[in-house]
Image 1 (tube, protein in one colour):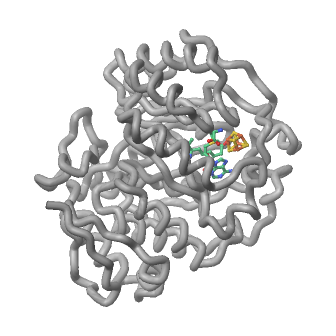
Image 2 (cartoon, rainbow, N blue to C red):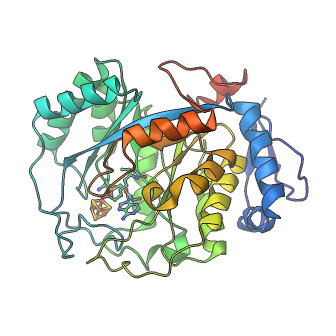
Length: 347
Ligand code: SAM
Ligand code: DTB
Ligand code: SF4
């Protein structure tokens, strides 16, 4: 039976059980952020090891299938047409290029392939083309993910029918800070798309960006929003702002990397069954900070020399880092660690 409980932040040693549906108050999440660093990481490790094989990291490769020229005004994004960032607008890639990139990703050891498009929302004919890409990538034996902007109920069902496993749509930040970053669509639009994705039976990949000038309380607000989604997302990408010249957020005071590590740990504790992805910003972090992120419970990375338009560590360097840390890439069909993970519908 599903039970509902409210989290007690003083319970340093408590590990949430799978079917306990917790509601996270922002203050309770903020109290996790305030824990002594070692206590926070200790607790995150406990949760991580109770739910996943401790040494396993998922490798997800990204491909920008439609780059630049986006009508939106997301203040972090080099692909918004209104900012002069040097990113040229391109057409949707042909199917053959997408399949070639997916094949290469699989050969390199990735198990998930994520196709990203710089759209506010796809049009009908876009969806049909993406459907063909999804089914072709899936037939290679990869998990499929797409991030195409806002989706209607019907579009989500179309993508599900073509075999889409995950849809990435980020909340990006706390509701209170959102208007500082984006004005061309509202928070509720994002929640609506996530609802359409859920109802279509597609797994949800949803996270955010830190280092955009938000406060710690606002970082806690983002995590609380994610953790209180019912159910919470199966994948949670935590991005560190990649500052791109020409975007409004370029020049934002940089976040202490240890605060990023804390954000990962808090995501792990509040969403025990989720794959927490150490996402954009890894190239700027270096090995030691990434190692701390894995210790804090991150168990997924974007893998490949490029994110969408910006750089990512070389695949060969990532393989060397995993080997150095005694971590291993998740293999296809890799199992979760606890018997009730299946019930929560995580990987
Ligand atoms: N256009 C679609 C949308 O916005 O939903 C899909 C692609 S969009 C690039 C996907 C996500 O990438 C954004 O929601 C944001 O979280 C992340 N992102 C974009 N630019 C970033 C940057 N400079 N640094 C960190 N994350 C970024
Ligand atoms: C996500 O949360 N991060 C990825 C993916 N989902 C689509 C995108 C990161 C983009 C970083 C900036 C760029 O390369 O354009
Ligand atoms: Fe467009 Fe997505 Fe970039 Fe926003 S994040 S400007 S919607 S591509």
